[in-house]
Image 1 (spheres, rainbow, N blue to C red):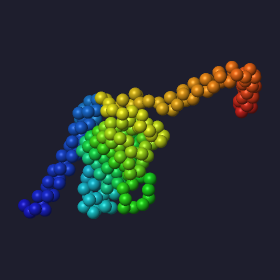
Image 2: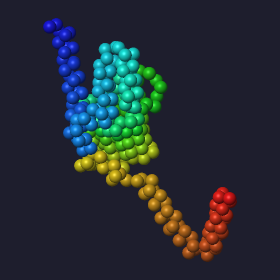
Image 3: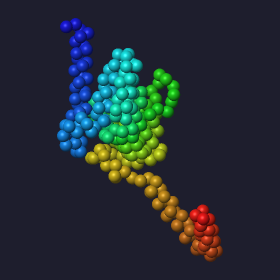
Image 4: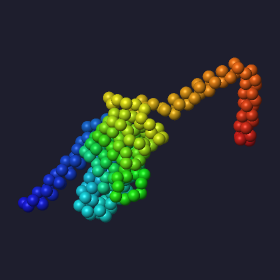
Length: 246
């Protein structure tokens, strides 16, 4: 056996081992799965990653049209769009998976969890540069989140559902909102815990409402006409609402 044949054999073994790890990872860590049968028919994410791993090898061998064609078939079957040139590490879990988009220059390290509707997209049309994000090991990207541009989501970081991330997130931090802001630090014992993410919009509105109430109280003490003016405004507002409904 020649050197080239030995290398090809090692690459095939490494590829099969990676795909096997992807399947085993889901079977061991997803509490919803009850049998191997479900793994084959109810998890489009694992099949999308398997198709990607084959297409990525073909793409790197410069059979780029063939790789793109295979991923087009994958997109049709799984509704998950992964560019074959993306760099994806071991044991990526795309949960549910529908609507996930992973761009050409995206980098995903080991043991990352991605939910449905996530986009790892670019903000530049310039070819030949890194346009997509880097997702470090053990990061969790919540459903519907958009991570855009050449930014870094740090190790064990979390991105809340439907957040739009345009700046890097430090390791062991949580980012939520549009645009996303870091609202928590420290690694969580539970990598999911999306129900515990703070509602920053609610907190801001609560603050504003309390601030307005304090200012109204001060003004009413200093000016007795404030209450009368407030009642007039209420009447004008009620008339406006009735006109809109009529």
